Length: 321
Image 1 (cartoon, rainbow, N blue to C red):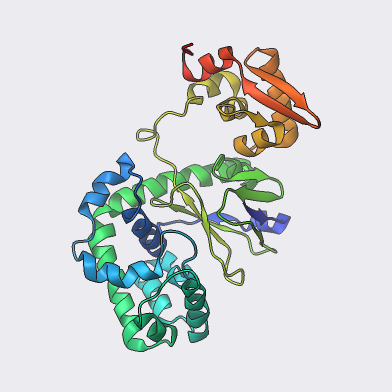
Image 2: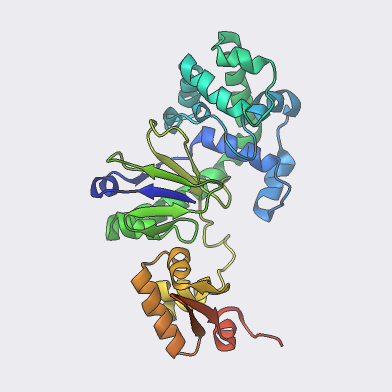
């Protein structure tokens, strides 16, 4: 579980990135090239792959394992200004940071011999890395960049319009169920237990075309806090959520609570999954129970909720049995 702790000042300094980040998309797309699970939205992109494949991937793959840690220096903040700004920042990484982060990477991954020269800041190896990043972007990402930019702009516009009209807390609630806002903590499922305290710096939220399932945060808490998350599909591409058609009838929050009960949940799990407060989850569950859509049972100090046959029928269609 990842928990990001906010103060009032952090809410005022939280924003969504204005453009796709070319280096985050590089790292996360390379993860997707090696992903065995296939998704229709990425299948066409995978078929194009890297025209200069082997040489570029030999350089990049050891630095960007698809599971676990990868170095923060590969995704510098300067990349928000474009690919060349990002690569310049990678090449200017202080030697101490290179050694520290490549040392962390080597604890669970076998690195090639040239990684030691990279850790020492050898200029020729750094420039090889820069060329590999450019070639990968040109052959893999550039052909798909209009689609990447369009998806991210659609997501960014949705978030920023909500923030402008209703405030940052309401904007954070739009990320449910991937991110769950329960003031003053933003939480997400994560491979490890981790707490991040923003301490007045705010948070940069970076939508990503290639991020899947789990958001990604920088490990070094001395760096500016960043959270990369999966950009939402535009409406014309997105498969309809089972409860989406119920939102005009029940309201978005109550429909989200009902949809969360596609799996049995406690009240606190309902709150996290639907992105509402504990008291709101309890209130919505009471209304849905009185309507015969859910059933609730108490076990010790916890209330457990499940869909009734009527609730399942309303949410997903007829139940066969």
